[in-house]
Length: 373
Image (tube, rainbow, N blue to C red; front, side, top):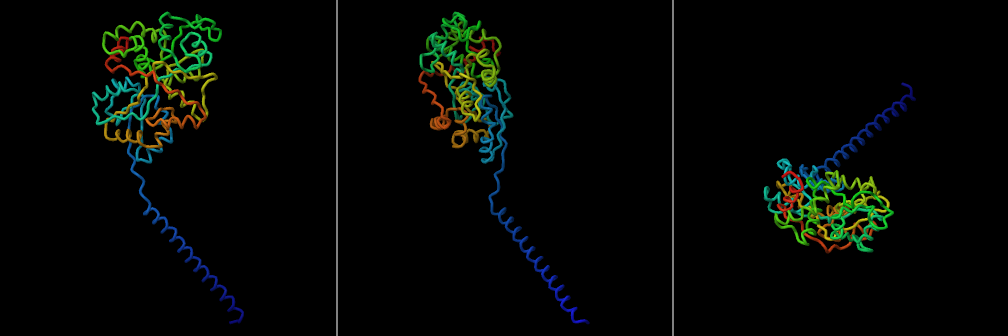
């Protein structure tokens, strides 16, 4: 054998040895990675089991429950919350509640009606919203001249307003009106009282004023105020079924169609707090005097519903998000902080606040307005 063959054989053997060593290194590295992954997965806490919870809610809360941040908080607590919207009166009277874990109407009278049929250990009121008037700067000037708005304030005098409506006063009949000479009655745009809680709260405010500054407490009082309150709805013509639809009309159609709309303060504030507000030029907010706070009251129908109520009232993230959606929370700082963070003026402290009629008395007036029992 030639001497120069040995070096060649030695090099080949070295290459084979090097490849074996590399294979061992790679195998050990792979085992290390697998071990790390197994150890990590074994050591990490298992994700919480997710429970689906269903609810029926007032439509004005739909944006809150649809917020991905709200969904994330519920998911972190092992809950997949699914909701269907409905009018508060419908929730209390016609919605089949057997399929739901909780009901979340927009008023305490509706919640009281629910409790009569579905007793619960407790209810939850995680947020509220006063009724308000979404309008425009030129309309505010006209209403100020007519004595409905106190100069330099956001106060909408319901007593003076009812005086105007009692005479079927038109916009073009207001003295000095060149800004909005419309040939239609001076009327707040509302929703349909047979379907929507905001219209029912408006009925509560108007009936209080018409009943000599007293909450309607019996059938006789309800009948006595009917002539004053009935035209407030009848003379509007078509009435949208929800405040969500009404507020969208205010935002998109403007002053010509909706010079002033009765909405929840939360709707207007939520729009102002949004990243890209769609409030029309000259948009402004007034507060009826007196007004009513719509207390959004959650009624648990099944044990899972209690969990939702507890989280909405105690979870700091959900409380902050509710404020960012324009709702006033039991801790006023959350609402104040949300408004301040956007550089907006703080809404006024409301003192002329009345309670709505009981469910039965409110229902009696709605029936007199033509709503099916």
